[in-house]
Amino acid sequence: MTAATLPIDAHDQRRRIFAIVGASSGNLVEWYDFYTFAFTAIYFAAAFFPAGNPTVQLLNTAAVFAAGFFMRPLGGWLFGWIADKHGRKNSMLISVLMMCGGSLLIAVLPTYATVGALAPVLLVIARLIQGLSVGGEYGTAATYMSEVATPGRRGFFSSFQYVTLIGGQLLASLVLVILQFIYTSDELKAWAWRIPFFIGAIAALVALFLRRALHETQAGDTMKSKEAGSLGALLRAHPRAFLIVVAFTAGGSLYFYTFTTYMQKYLVLTTKLPPAVATNLMTLVLFIYMCLQPPFGALSDRIGRRNSMLIYTSLAMICVVPLMYWIGDAGSAWAAFPLIIAGMIISSFYTSISGIVKAELFPAEVRALGVGFAYALGNAAFGGTAEYVALYFKNAGTESTFFWYVAVMALIGLIASLMMPDTRKSGGYLPN
Image 1 (cartoon, one colour):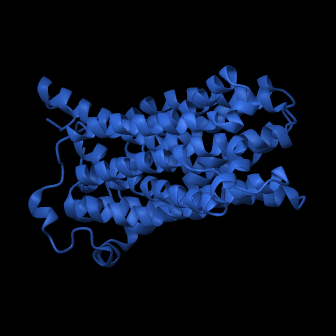
Image 2 (cartoon, rainbow, N blue to C red):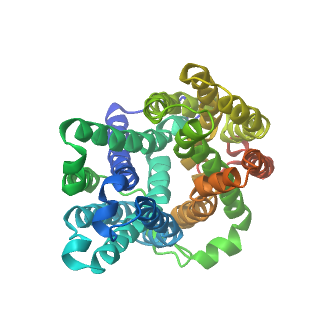
C-alpha cells in the first residue's frame, strides 16, 4: 500500500487543512499588500514626490516598487535561515508581522507637503520592509505547505500557494475598484488611497492570529544541526538542486509576469484595446487562472512533478512566440481571451507546483533556504524585470525579441527539467 492510499485519520486531515489555510492566509495578505502599492501608485505618487510631470512621479513610484523586488533575495536568505534554524512557524509569523508593519507605515505616512524629502525616504523604507517580507514568505510558505500536506496529495495542497498569490492580486484590484466607485478621483488622491493599506494591515493581523495556532514541522534535532540554514552547506552539498530552482524560477516567473502584469499593457499598446476593456478582461482571466491551480496540482500528484515541468517548459518554449503574435493581432477582447487562457493553462503546469517541485529537491535542514533564496534570485532578476525588458524592446521597435527571450528562458527551464530527478522513483526528500 502506497502513501497515497494509506487511510488518513479525520482529525489529522482537518489539522493539515487548517495548516494549509493558515499558511495560505499569510501568503494572500503578503501579495495583496505588494500589489496594492502598484495599483494605488497613480493616486499617491504626487503626495510623495514634488509636483511636476505626472510621468516622472509614476516613474519614481515604479522605482520604489522595483526596490521591493530587489530586496527579495535578502529576504529569501534571511527568512530561509530563520525557518531552517528556528522553525517554519517563527519565520512565517515574523514575515507576516513585517508586512503588517510595512503596510501600516505606508497608510500613515506624512506627505511631501508636510515633511519634505523625508516623505519619499520613509516610503522607500516601508517598501523595502515589504520586499524583504515577500522575499521570505515564498520559500517558508512553500516549504511548510509541502511538509504539512497529505502524502500523495502534496501537489494539490501546495497549489493553494499560487491560488492565494493570484487571489491577493485580485483582492487588491477589487478593493481599488470599490474605492473608485465610492470616492472621487480627488478624494482618492487626497486621502482615500490610504484605505487599502489599512485593510492590508488589519488582514495581516488576522493571518498572524491564524498562524499562531500552526504546529511546527521542522524537527528540533534538525534545527540544531550545524548545516541548518547554512548558505555554505546549501551551495556545497546541493549546487545542482539550487541551480535547477533558479532556472525553474527564471523561466517560470518571466512567463508568469508576461501573461499577468505585462499582458494588460500589451493589450492596450499592441492589441489596441481600451484600458478599461483590458482591465476587465485580465480580471476575468486571472480569476480563471486562480481556479486552474488545484486541478493542475492534483494532476502532478498523478503524473509526477518532473513530467509536469517537462510539459510546461516544452509547451512554453514552442507556444509563447505564436501566442504573443496572435494576441497582438486579435483586435478584440473576445478574440484575445482564449489565447490568453491558453497561455495560462500552459503556465498552470508550473505555477500549481511552483513550491512543491522546489521543496522536494532539498533536505529539511536547508529546505526553506534552498527554495526561498534560489527563488528570490531568479524572480528578482527575470520576473521583476519582465515588464521593463518588454517595454524596452517595444520602444526599440523590436517587440518580438521579447517573445523569443521568454522562449529561450523556457528552453533553459526544459534543460533543468531534464536534469531534475523524478522524486516518485528516486526516493526524494519529500516522497509521495
